[in-house]
Length: 331
Image 1 (cartoon, rainbow, N blue to C red):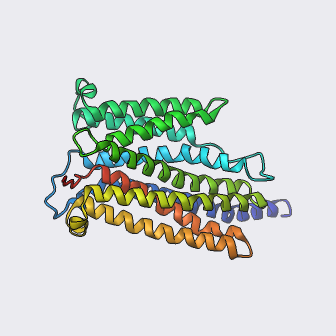
Image 2: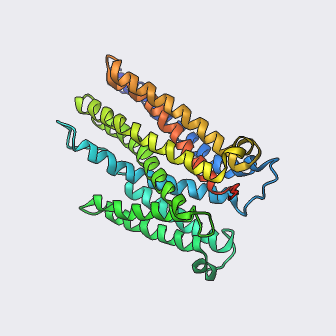
Image 3: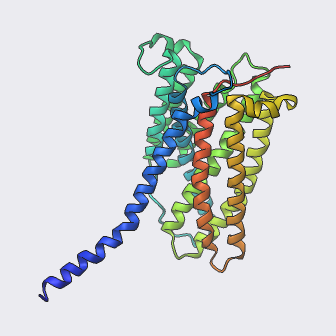
């Protein structure tokens, strides 16, 4: 009896101890499924009743583009936050395990899928000859190669050099979003370049800050890092807002924007994204208030986690936007 009882008790106590981890895994799985369903079903829902023509494979393109954007956010965010961490006095030398090479690998797969779509219009028809004749196909191949180089750099002794292939991905996306036939495509590409860079730093940076705080639990350096990120995030949000407004006005002039926000698929998705970004801004202000006034500044992590989840949906909606017909009306 005395030998068996401790074993039974240990088994009983280990069961509940695993429940939080199980619940967390289930929650993450549910979020992943939701994140996949939004781009797959989002284009058809946004197009319903608008009269806009659906692009071939819009759901697949939206999903692949969402993965590509997410794959860009993770390594850029890590580089950004690791640089901030080096300026924090007394920062512990250990940090969380890097996800950069895994994210870059996902980026390679997504970019190759987009290249195939650009060449054939589907994932099933063969048409490699059209791959190099298509501008979007060539840019997608460039992105796949850049992600592959970034993955190799992430495994090297100097992971910081992956910023250059990642910058090539951002540049390729900026060029893809504004073809040569568009009015002042260079201006549009510049706006997208700034918008995408700041968004990737904001989303990926916050994710890596929270992962770093978990690793640095119980240290003052964690509070300092969160505060430092919060100050930079204000500037990033301002740049994202300014470039987003300018890009929207270029595609939907002031006289038509209110109507297009509700009657076009692009406008509906953009409206949903704007509302979600506004909610994210409220969460960011809440986290910043807790950081300044709460007895334990790290209670700011609670709204920050909700902010990360909401930003993940924003990234997915950005992917959906790229698969929808743009209501461009040039002057």
